Amino acid sequence: MATLDYSYKSVNEKNVEELENDTLEWDKTLQTCTDELVFLKHFLTSEVFQTINPNTSEKIKSYTEEFEDIKTEKIEVQLALRNHKNDLKGMLECEDISCDIFYQNQHQELLNRLKDLLVNFQQLKLSIFHFSSPFLKRKSIISKVAHN
Image (cartoon, rainbow, N blue to C red; front, side, top):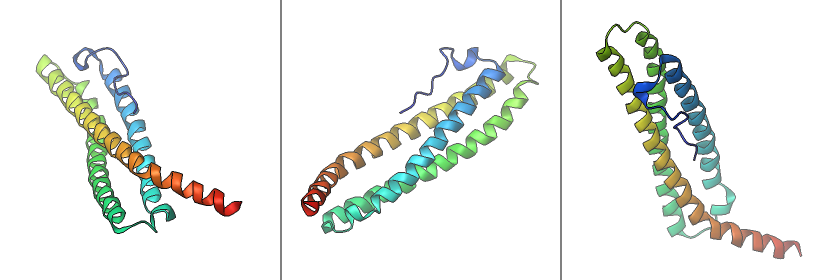
């Protein structure tokens, strides 16, 4: 999982340009997340899991539901990020510290949401990897036997 703390400065020590740079990195992270979600969805619906017992089907269904929850949260974070990127322009017009603090708090809250999303997604991916490993090993052994 990619780290989100690209600078050692705290949010309240960053200028608008540094906050904007954070958002660009977060955008890249979310795009990678999107690509991984697409791959894992295709993976879970692949032939590897089609001939497995009903218990496995239930587990795959459970993963698919978790997937949808993470996908929904990712979309919400992306929308919040888009709005935040637009809002940061307003920080340039701030004339007092409370105005700056508002944008800094908004930035920190978005960072926290993104971190939570990535932690949840990482846990789901690890769970899927642990679940699927035995099937992949078994399938590759069957393939080797069939080819010999």
